Image: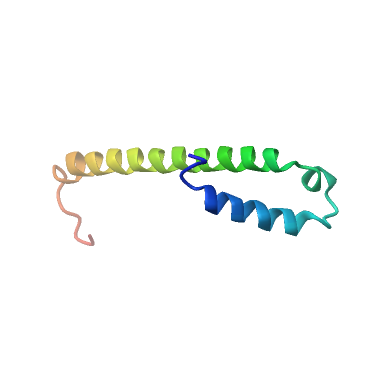
Length: 78
């Protein structure tokens, strides 16, 4: 994944580095470039997992709706 979005990740690292150079939070300002890359890769992976989970939930919801709403009488206000 890192190689796919290398330019974007490089830009984010630059922005993060600039933003936190004078930060009051030493644990952030002390992160190495490699640690920032690793954190971004983890974040990107997490985002991909959440997107996949959302697709599964949407798919399950669509199936449930087809199975249950098609059998139930139409509500007058729907």
